Image (cartoon, rainbow, N blue to C red; front, side):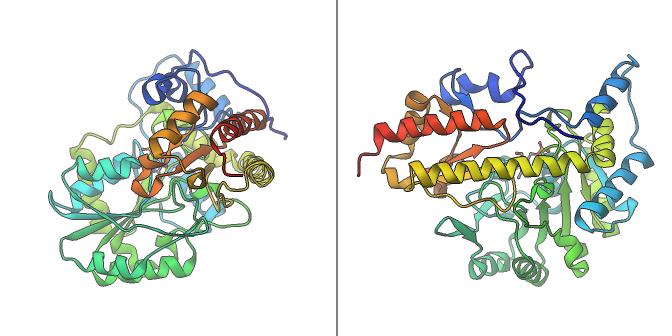
Length: 395
Ligand SMILES: Cc1ncc(COP(=O)(O)O)c(C=O)c1O
C-alpha cells in the first residue's frame, strides 16, 4: 500500500492544540505551526477504520481493555523492539505524563530529588516541581550539536540519598539521541548502585531514524527490573495523542503492584474507549505505515539539512537519531533568546518551540517539528531564511 504523506489535511475547525493555541503561545494566530509534537498526517488507514467502525455503534459507555489490548502491545514490542514481555507486566495509563506522575507520587516523597537531563521536554520540569519534588539537572554535554551524558555528574547526583528518581527520556526530546548500549549500561549501573528508580519515558521509541535502533533499557539489563518503569504509548508514532492512551511496563511484581494501586487511587485507570481501539489497530496493523512514515520523516530531515547547508550554514544542526523534532542552533545569529523568538514570529511568521522552554541550555535554539507534508517544511524553511536575511549580517 502507498501512503500519501504529501497530502495537506486542513486542521482548522478541529480544535487542534497546534493551531488554536498559537495566539496564546506566540502572540499571533497566523504563524506556520511547526511546534507541539503531533503530526499533520492522517493516522494509518487501519486506525481510522477501527475508530469509524466503533463510532458507528453509537453507544460509548465504560469499556474494558482486555487480552486483545495487551496482546497487541506484547506483539508490537516483540516485532518492533525484540523485547519479549509478559502480558501481566503491562499497566494501562491515560498518558506518559500521568504514568510519570503516578511513579513520582508512589516512589518519592515531597522534597525528594528527581534527576532530569536538560535541555528536555518542558513538562519534565513542571511535573517534578509542581508535585513538590526537587529538580536536579543532569545537563547534557553538547559537542558540535551532538549530545552526550556527563556520567560523573550523574553519579554524584544519584549518590545523594535524597535522590529517588531519574526521569529519563529515551529517545531524547529535543536532542534526538537514541541512547546506545554503553550509555544505557552506565546509567543502569549508577542507578542500581545508588538505588535510584528509573522512570524511562520511551514515547518516541518507535521513531528511530537513519538506521538507529531503540534499545529498551529494561530489556537490555534484566537485572535492573526492580529499578525501572518503562513508559510507552502509540500516541507519537501513530498521531493519536488526542486519544489519551498509554501504558507502563514493569517486570517487578512489587513495583508493579504499587504503581497499579497508586494509579487506581488517583482514578487514572479508566481510560478512553477510542484510545484502546486505536492502540490495537495501530499495533496490529501499523508496521507498514510506520516504515513509510519513517522514510518520509528522513526525507524531511535531509531536506532541512541540505537547505541549511546551502542557505544558512552557520545554523547548527545534526540529523536526529530519532523523533520528528529537530533541534536547531541559531546561536551564531547573535540574538538574545527573546529577540530570536520574536523575530521568528514577527518577521518569519513561523512558530517553532522556543529553545529556552526546554531549559536555559536551550537559549539560542528552536525546535522544529518536521511531522508535516514536505511542502509545509519547505515553506517553514523559506520563512526561517527570511528571518536570517533580516538579522544575520555578519557576512
Ligand atoms: C518525551 C515526551 N514524554 C511525554 C510526552 C507526552 O505524553 P502524553 O501525552 O502521553 O502524556 C511527550 C509529548 O510530546 C514527549 O515528547
